[in-house]
Amino acid sequence: MKLVPLIKWAKEIFEVVPHTRTLQKWCANGDLPARKIGGVWYIDKDAFENSTGNDLADQILNSSKRSA
Image 1 (cartoon, rainbow, N blue to C red):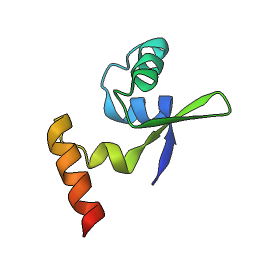
Image 2 (image 1 turned 180 degrees about the vertical axis):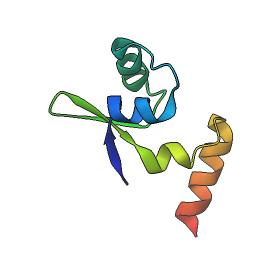
Image 3 (image 1 turned 135 degrees about the vertical axis):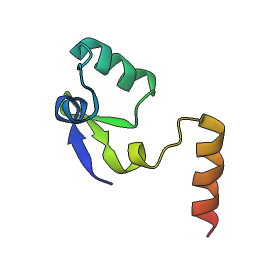
Image 4 (image 1 turned 120 degrees about the vertical axis):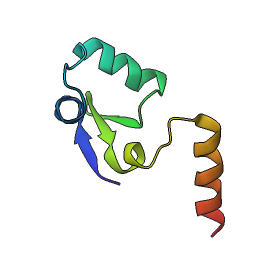
């Protein structure tokens, strides 16, 4: 697991970075693989890069990794 500060991650991913509150809302809603540590949001870069964008497919892939 590689944790990257939310704003740094957003600058790497987006051409036009969404507003900070929007990014924080996505984290709080679980739309991004994030953790809040000491009031600062961090993105789990490995989890983001390994996601397909399809919740069902991600659940199946994650469960098959655990059973292997």
